[in-house]
Length: 141
Image 1 (cartoon, rainbow, N blue to C red):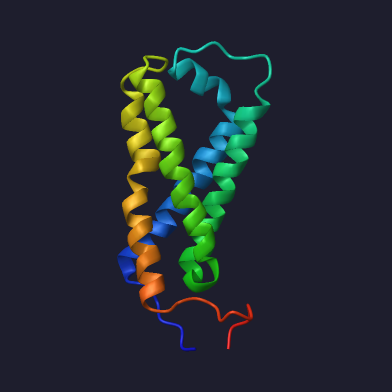
Image 2 (image 1 turned 90 degrees about the vertical axis):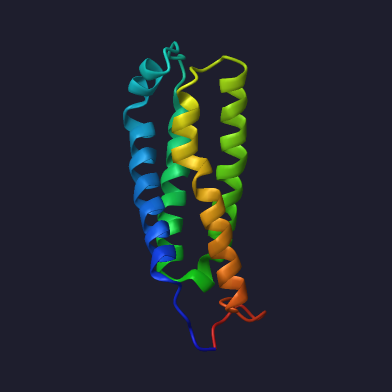
């Protein structure tokens, strides 16, 4: 099958999301105390869950970069990333609505997660429409 590339803007979105998630993930692992200060929240004794989440965020960043480089092989990474951004964004907004985090956190959630959902959806549709997927045997031809 001939490989067709994505439009430039789609590759740019994936690269930006990849770099952004790598940086945010690294910050969650190393600068978690600053995050708690920004949210005016007390730091728990165990910060491991925040650091593990940072590792996952960074791994998704690497996945978006892999998808930018080879969309047909890595579309499932993008699908999982889109779903995680949608669900995490909605969950975070519930904390805003209930007043557990400040109102301005909705802006952070929008630019960190929710803004990517429509773009990722369009990219996934484009990959499917172009037939940019592997044959059922799992090997490219």
